[in-house]
Image (cartoon, rainbow, N blue to C red; front, side, top):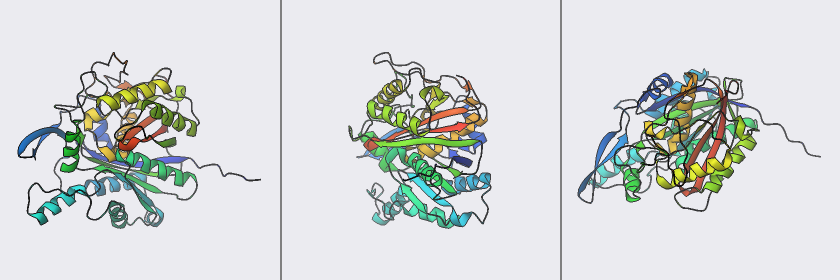
Length: 380
């Protein structure tokens, strides 16, 4: 006869965030409660032609955003020096250290338009560097699953804590400005001309953004709990996710969280503002829910932070609920009628607790979804 030890509950104890809207959870909650500023413009040279793109960039600073948000989260969680030697690091990113590598590569090549196609130091070095700088001696992992990277980092950290393999984890996600990503999305004709409009029938593409966020997880009780989640690979497309797989990963996440669709208070959609991805997510959500609760996308406000969006958008969602509301989907005005689309929030909706579905879908069909819980279930 075999027995299985019940998984321990996992809680979020502290968070830090830094995006184009500013630094800190309070700053983001205040900014997302009102009309957000438009993206700035960046100019790139492509084959001798100057092109302008909208981009949500960070304000210039001498401080490293990843180190800054990690320290903010560790401080907010009250992590003591005695806890640091066993604290794990779970790092998710698309760019990793590509931004710095681009600068170094061009300097070595003495060519303004020379860009590396790989990372000189490898992806995993960023997790190791952060662990060393913050004296975190637990295991460290790097997740590179496209736009679900730091979402999967959080799921893996929660799984290890739930199994009793780890007591404290720092989950980090980041994206920094780099030309390779911009040129790549431009080549795929996925960049918007002016702004991102997730789920809006007038949308014309995504807008990239910079940012970093960190969250501290542990089994010690706290107001926010990672209730459960799932990750599922879709092989239908090299660049997107199918509606059927999106519906399945949501169903698996709810099953793991021991919840039904009606238990969900609100949804943070992935919402890239690209035609195919928005349609697939809209159809997948309609398959998973008989009636959709209030839904939003944050990418119209901060840009698409790619592999960093899991940690970043989780931290921002927590900040908004702590301030008593679920944020509006910036840029949305009118839903699609053919095929029928979803209509995310055009204005913030009051709530201060409940269960929140978080969706993150990436290139290569990398899909993850998880449920956060705070307080009692709030009616919608």
